[in-house]
Length: 458
Image 1 (cartoon, rainbow, N blue to C red):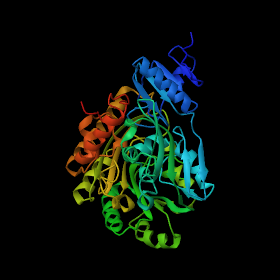
Image 2: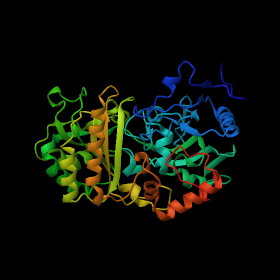
Image 3: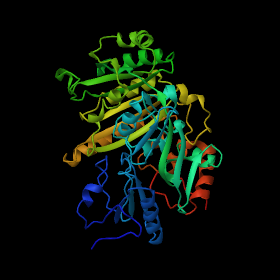
Image 4: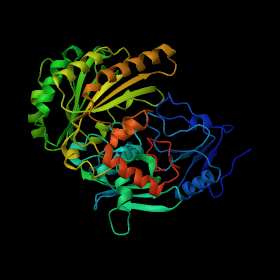
């Protein structure tokens, strides 16, 4: 028997439906949840109909955009998944330098449309990251030091609240500035965003790519990197990767599986100036491979897609860091060198620049003075025996625990299922109080709670 939702024209799936198991798969293959209903929306009218159906039956609701969140908040057991993944349209106004984006779009969708006009905005570092989740949690990416977080470039949004009312978050007359503030980092706590409005920036070919050193050289490389980055201009964003070299076509087979320390750079600006600034980094020590070159921005965005494919099992631990002290560097290098899997890795994101020039209460995203983010990612295959997953989880936890004294905050998009204390830490006391007040205003019954949840006041 087919389940019907009044006024809904999209596809409705239940556990008895063909295609149900495929529809409940998300990026993190370790997440195995069985919703009672998956409502695959075609537009705003479907969103309204599905939410009304869920409210009338008091169903738990999960929101799925790109389905890329490591904690699996795109799914729930027994409830209703509001699946927005078919709503992927992107409209670009090159004259105004703005884009209107539906909530199921991926960063590859937005980059393709914007780059047709030489434009872009800060987005994720792989093309299959969802626009919605990344934006609502803050959004770090290659353009962040020059143009700010993804959330900082969110100019407006259409949002359906728990009461079924459509609101426009924004700072223009007649829009809701408080809701915009909350959406800039507050996650999916305040409703279903059916349309995002982004500011775009001119972004031509970038000077970008990784430089590889042997893992044994990581302590020296990271010290040199730290000292050089103290004078880095906003045009430069870097990500350090510590792992076994992935079997990518651009990496020689002789390096595949070798433990390496790599610094990937993205210079947004004059290439000659970038070449001069990056020369001391690229010539340091004995690099194994240097792939820094002018390339289209979209090519950089997709460069590492194959290292984080859909369906692998992922387990993450993450923390913000201040300065990379000698002790922190030695701890990172030691634990990174113990990696066993060719799939697991640790990343150090360089923050600062434009991110740090807003105050901590300018948006819900609060921790703007952090200098770096460390993300430790255990990964393994679905068919691996259980002991492999246990080993990768243990490596991740031990690495994270060893960095406890260096922790300087939390990035909410990198949180797993870690509880309200860590969520509170992500926002700080002042921002968390304001978020609770806004949650109480927009969602007093905590209807939207399958997320990094901000509970309303009692």
